Image (cartoon, rainbow, N blue to C red):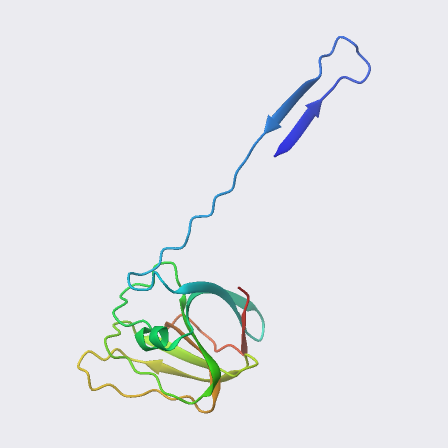
Length: 159
């Protein structure tokens, strides 16, 4: 709330008027794809050599959410991707069963440093390859292929 006061300083015939202006700011919640409504969302910052880039992602931080991932999601709507969070270093692979979007998977270690990246293709027939990191990772970020022109040096989760 802001208050504005206009007053005459030297002329007693000038009236003093007080006006109160109330403004509200509403933030529209992001549109979340069907099937991901129960996932938490967070903003992550990808750190590149010359700039940082914020992304809004769904967080998959338990076994059920990680197993579901982006299966059957055809449009991310307001999300930029999904961040898979593991409690300990892992070397497990990802696959694209029932995932219609072509994705880039970027792996990061426990400190958020880049480990590796791989492009993954949709797999409609059920005989899907496993996509592996080049080393242990703690975080894995899936974004649509082409969303990252360059690969980031690091990732920071900010909320």
